[in-house]
Amino acid sequence: MSNSNIKNLLVDHNETIRNALKKINLSGLKVCFLVKNNKLKNVISDGDIRRSLLKSLELSDKVKYVKSKKFIYVQENYDFLDLQNKISKYGIVPILNKKGHVIDYANEKRIRQIPQSEPLLKGNELKYISDTIKSGWISSRGKYVNMFEKKFSSFVNNNYCLSTSSGTTALQLAISTLKLKQGDEIIVPDYTFVSPINSIIHSKCKAVLADIDPDTLCISYDSIKKITNKNTRAIIIVHLYGNSPDLEKVLSFCKKRKISVIEDCAEAFGTRYKNKHAGNFGDFGTFSFFGNKTISTGEGGMIIFRDKKKYELAKKLRDHGMNQQKKYWHDEIGFNFRLTNMQAAIGCAQLENANSFIKKKISIQRKYESKLKIIKYLIFPSPKKYYINSHWLSYMKINPKLKDAKKLRDDLVYYLNQKGVEVRTGFYSAHLMDIYKNSKSKKINYKNSKQISNSIITLPSSVNLKDKEINYICNLILNYKLIK
Ligand SMILES: Cc1ncc(COP(=O)(O)O)c(C=O)c1O
Image (cartoon, rainbow, N blue to C red; front, side):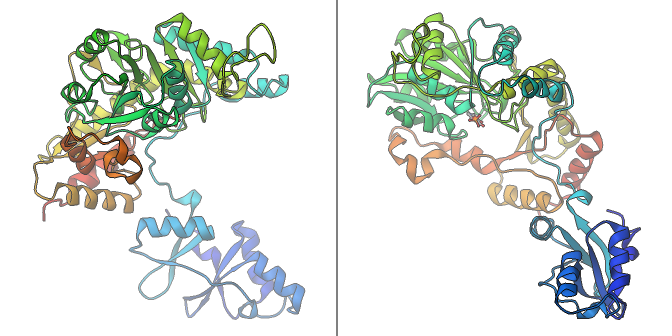
């Protein structure tokens, strides 16, 4: 922020309403700061003046008589989160020094929190979406839906791609094609975004929580072996933060027992396992195009299939279970899980830049790593021989062996948030939440899930993140005295 034009917003309380209006007019900010002996006395908006004029005041009256609502301010050593809250409530916030003098102001435009992950929509998104509007094809029919599925198909090298309204509906649709019975069990990691767990429960199956591997953050093979039983019908592998478990071991275990495998690749667009795109190893791979994902359609998802028959069934289920030849004749109890033509248009444009987005995401993780690796208490994801992580979201861990690792992690996150950096503490272990208590297995102690949940920090990772922003974040961390 710069305070070069702050004087243009200050109005002495004895000045006239006319002069105050002139200042408001010049600044274009719709408010002025009323001062007495240079100290802030009030914040007056053009609306406050309008209401006072309509009531009784004249333009020649003193501005101090204008009635206004309660005003707010922050001190110069403000808490960033407090300032953010005030900006979202009041729009403009004066910043005062110890003497109560206005030294600056903040509003949405003058302050930017560095976000976790925001979409970049600077390619053909606007062009293609305008095309859908001009053509009138704005719901799920129209050329972009097919085009998006085709382009996605060639990107991940899979012939059976079906778009959906979200990553969650992709999971639910995949599970529905398995035609499972109430009480059938599906194994899912305890440490994940909750969407795959909810999808199982909504399908009337029993979700059984497995522990994770502390290195890959993905479902642990040992844990799978412990909780598999005669009711186990499927396993959802979540490629968390672009990671992958040892797929071969899990797949051969599942093949022997006729257990279906769903790869949740919501966080792994661009991740390649032994040179093949993630999602191509199980029976299904599901993707999310939520706004924070590597490519986004706002909301949206995709399923890729190994089996053509499952693809065709899912296509029917996605569209109310309607017979594709006989309109309004329903063969299945289906859903409406379709992606719109407008969303697909954005998706087509996003795919045109997908390779450069993935490259950028990987380079962001590497930059954090190279600048911060000298800090001994931080652990970064170690590169693996068998897969390339596309690093949707960069992350690091506070060494969990440290005493008070959770407190240290929470303090660092709080500090960075205050400094305008949106870092997060990741997910909570699902088994600790009351609503998932029936999914807990007595055979598992969830040690790794709890440990990761207490030590991880996810870092800003937008594709438009600037090097100077990465440097700013790293310098804050380098200068932060974690161990006091
Ligand atoms: C691992 C995982 N699975 C599923 C989803 C759900 O995707 P959506 O938000 O598109 O429903 C997400 C996140 O958004 C996710 O991170």
